[in-house]
Image (cartoon, rainbow, N blue to C red):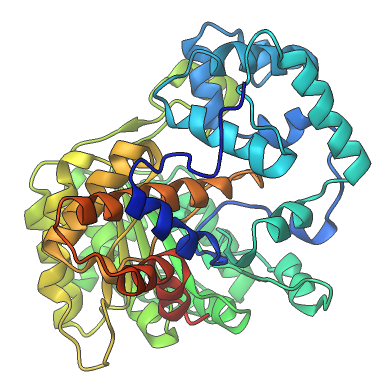
Length: 466
């Protein structure tokens, strides 16, 4: 029975008229975790499992909930067994965003518009594998089929960016792949901090003995990224903090961290504050967008973390005391030092949506002529569901300007994730369409069609300098 059609998720007539304005727009994917090497090498896939299930901790998490053994999730189980296990799970996932995402992926990539069930899973498995083989389906095929114009990957600060350089030099590739500066290991809370400092010193041929020399070396790497097409940085922090410190205290923290001594909470927070501040100044200098993802509690199942590692589906939504205080203090700290770059804040806990949407507006004032210098980013991770997207956009529209919103990002390691942009566009169209029905906005198709186009692509293209 047909499940996905052209009006999927569009429950009112204005939405059906508005959705095509967004649907025709290309995708500006300003944050994801795709591998540039895979994009460049463009090797054809062999099996639907390698595209659909490998590396996708969203699906792994759901399968564990359904009692699937790890052998059929991240283990050495046969591909067909893994697919069957996924089918058993998905066929029960009503109300979960994965149910919609997965069926959009089947429909838009493979032309399958029926629901995956335990009655047809083996037939659909064979059909998708047949298409993969006959079409020689590859990463670039999936990117081009989704009309992607820009991809912002997530890259280690010591990366040589070899694959980005090869992509940029390949005239056959008609989309942009830009690196993003992701210095997780630059923070003293990271287990690899001291090793990172040693490698940074080797990479930059600089002696790093204190905070100032550390930041100087980091500056070289930011400059290298900027010279290689970087448009943005990305940071993942569990909490937003603002605990200032002078250089002497920062030097003491650096020495203790390098010697493996335990640091207290004040020292950890001070280092995060001042390193982010220094980096923000570098981002502003080079015109990079600073992206801040916050609110995750990572690797909370220590037994499974030891067995499988990070990014495996054992993370959680976090909470934070005094978020409003620290967020305002931090943005004020950057402003006073003239180090406030363009920034996007992604909040994982929906309880703080209005707080974040409200706080960032205090620091929009600028003499640079920048529209929405600071952004409340799209609903993230556990929040990129229908209700999560709607809540984020509602809070943004009430506290800021929805018309300036940067829209959806993929934030995924899977090349089959671009259908999430379509899902977002349908939800956006339905929300705006319902506003028309309720008389909350004018029934002006040209006006609202422009809004759809801007949020779908134009705003991000302008903001990131596309």
